[in-house]
Length: 359
Image (cartoon, rainbow, N blue to C red; front, side, top):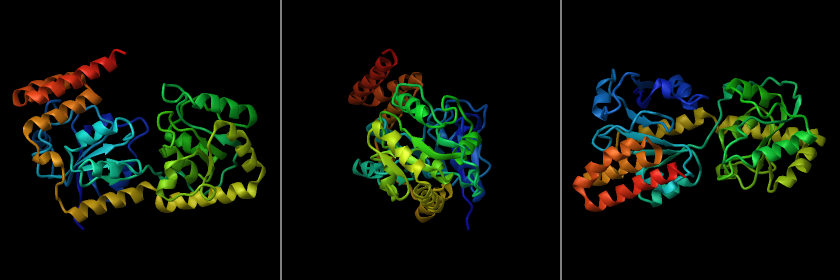
């Protein structure tokens, strides 16, 4: 089997606080990951970055969590490229635009691959969130918490959480739901909880985030809001998890399952078996590598055939949406020299970004 090598378009220090869940799995199956050296100039283009690799990579991968700029030359390199689109439900139309620079948009939410395809991208890869099974050994703990919770409770997109958790805490024994937990601590909370309640973000309440898979993998009964993306990937309400529609239903629903141990354990175990069989990061990596091997180095990015000003405008849009805005401003003269229409569009994108920043 030919070994695979990924050039990661980020420095090792840029990783998310909880870690990138795919990293250990990719390494375990023999994929070499090259990170950009810490002292690399921020204006290095893709060919300069490739020159730093000890071997030619099989894939150039752009994670969502990175502080390294988008390198020039992505549409010219003869190596497949991929971009991680984790929160794809936010600014979807713009994500589609800059994903055209890449051969594979890697999408974390079900249903969005069809939207990307309809917009003209031929090869999105849908990899829903999952769990790391090694965090949840099948060694039963004393489930001392009636309800477990780990997650943010402050911020504009999490306003629904605090009232729900405050109400639950008045009726049931919870862990300290207002503190922050490491990944290992979170796993321990879930392993010691009979039920884990999920309240997704306000702007996308159907979100099947990483927590829902981790809760089920820990053998707790997941209680989550309906509708949920879980049903889009084959899980069933009442079989693998319990669902609620309104916050007022939560206390009676939790009470029902706490009062019926047999029912709670049956649904929790079915959920656990389902996610450990079909929704681990090993499952997701298997799908990703299968696509890469099937395509055998073929490139798909629509922007590879675009005129230069349109490619430059996609870079500008990326920076206007993600920052730093100074880089969007640096892209604008290149766009303006090549296209009057592109110059107008680019100026509007930069102005919109400034407006949002100062609201």
